[in-house]
Length: 70
Image (cartoon, rainbow, N blue to C red; front, side, top):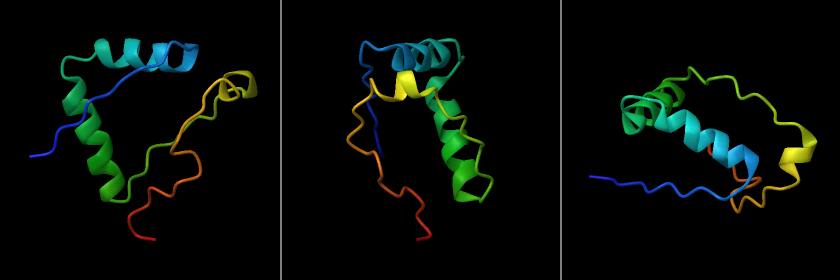
């Protein structure tokens, strides 16, 4: 069994993600459905964030290819 712990930084982007997931009946179930969609080739559209918000985020996974087929 895999367990994932999400931590959120104190920036606008991550605050919105946390707020969005907290509004779901089952945040873990929602994330599982997103992963399942990606596995089955139904990649959800990712909306680009404005540059002002992107510059505040130092994501260690930036540039990492998460596509398991590559």
